Image 1 (cartoon, helix red, strand yellow):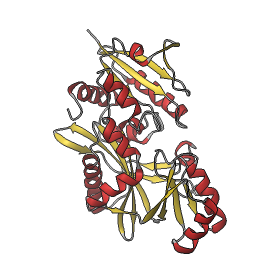
Image 2: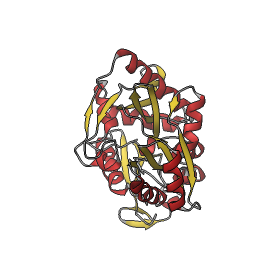
Image 3: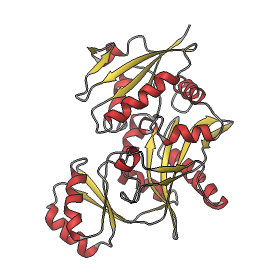
Image 4: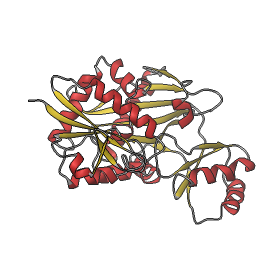
Length: 325
C-alpha cells in the first residue's frame, strides 16, 4: 500500500510563485511506486484547495499519511502552518512550530548563533514605531556604511537592500518595514558568499553537511538578493572554490547552526567569508529551502551523488518517525 503524501505549496507570501515550482518538483520526483502524491494548493489569501476545490485544512488533510511542506516565507516557515499540522496530528517535514518561528526571526537566530561562537555582523534592531526619517538621519551619523538593511522576520532575502548613501537609507528602511514590523541594520561584510545544506541522519551521521556552494551574484545586485536568486543570472559553484580549512569550517558551522536553532530534517545556512573570518548570515528552514530545478539545495544533493527522489524518501521517512528521526 502506497504512503499518501500531501505536498503543500503556494501560500500567502511574496514567494508564492517559487513555492508552486518547488511543490511541482517534489510532486514529480516522488517515487510513484512508493507514494501516492496529493497536490494541496494554498492560495494567496490562505484558502486550502484539493483538486481545485476549496476545503478547510482539516478536511484537506484527511487521509494524508504525511505532509511535505514547501510553503516558502510567511505562513509556511514561521510556525503558523506547523501549528495547524500539529493540531490535526499529521506528521510533516521540517522543523516544529517553535523552531520554525525562531529560525524565521533573524535577530533571535543571530543571538543563538553568536552564543555558539560563530561570528555575526554588528547590527541594530529597529521598530516600525520609530520615525523613519529621524531614524535614517541618526543611523547615518552613527552607523558605519555601507550597511545592509533587512526585515528582521522573513526569508529568501526579501526586502533586503545595500545602503551606501543617506539618500538610499530611508527608502531601504521603508522597503524592509513593508515586509516586517522590525528591521535589522547590519554592517556590510564584503567577501565570498557561501551556503551549506544540512540533512539529519544521513549517511550514518546524525547531522550531515552537504558540500558548501559558492554563490556569485550578478554585479548589478551586488549580493545574493531575492531578485538575484530568481533572475537566472546568479552563478553557483557546486562545490565551491574554498580552501580545505574554509570548507571544513563552513560545514561545521552549518551543522552547529542547524542543531542550535533546533531545526529538523534539513536546512540551509548562508555565510560570508571575509578577511576577518566566516560570518553567519541566516538559516533557511526546510520549508524555505527551494526545490526548483534552479534551486541550490537539489544541486548540492546531486553533488554528493544522491538522487532527489532518494533525498525526498529519506525526509519523508524522518517525518513519519518524528522531528529528529
